[in-house]
Picture (cartoon, one colour):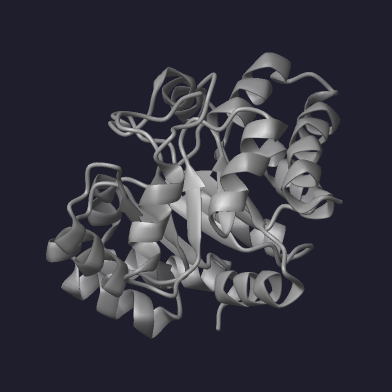
Amino acid sequence: MNRIEERFARLQRDGRKGFVVYIGAGDPDLEATRQLALAFDGAGVDVLELGVPFSDPLADGLVNQLAAQRGLDSGTTPARVLETVAAIRRDSQIPIVLYIYFNLVHRIGLETFITDAAQAGVDGLLVLDLPPEEADLYEALMRAAGLCNIYLVAPTTPEDRVAYIVKRGAGFIYYVSREGVTGMQTQIADTIGAMTARIRAHTDLPIAIGFGISNPEQAKAVAQAADACVVGSAIVNQIATHGRSPELVPRVTQFVAEMVQAVKGR
């Protein structure tokens, strides 16, 4: 088992829910990303998703689009993100997923990127725009490297396609709880329970629910319906607010810790 599988197995043994954080790598710079990763580990975050900056992040709303642009402006490249993961690994074994668009992987070369990611200490990839029908080689290379290929299921995904997707995934299934792009919402979707049950009928993989979770109350409610919740835009917005302030890491970590406590009852 890699770190993602080990973490979810431990959560299941302990009867606890997982908390997954998404941030844009290189926002405001890669040293801040490294420091935030270590602080999140200390705060009880179970999985860290690092968004690799891309010029056309089609699955993302404005908050994460701006984070990607700040990452690009700070000189963040896929190679430098992997260097940062390797630096995190010197001090932490927090499971790390790269949230990435296929153009970047294709440009570097599929086998090269996956090999380099594994060597750096990445545990899984969530390639936003790679459909499983086109992913035979990708999945084979991921398995050979010991990495989890994580797939998305949406509220509009038909039953037969849910079954197809989850059978090809590894690590966990990411349920996108809302149609559209990433972003903060004032309330969670009322279809979460029913849709999670539909997914669960086809897989024993952990289910993590994301898109739109903005505060501790929402995080707690969502986690009760699945194995983990994912919070991104609300945290990215905190990073945007504090920017290069000396208070960036403690302020953002406190924001995250309050949601961790709500989910885990710590």
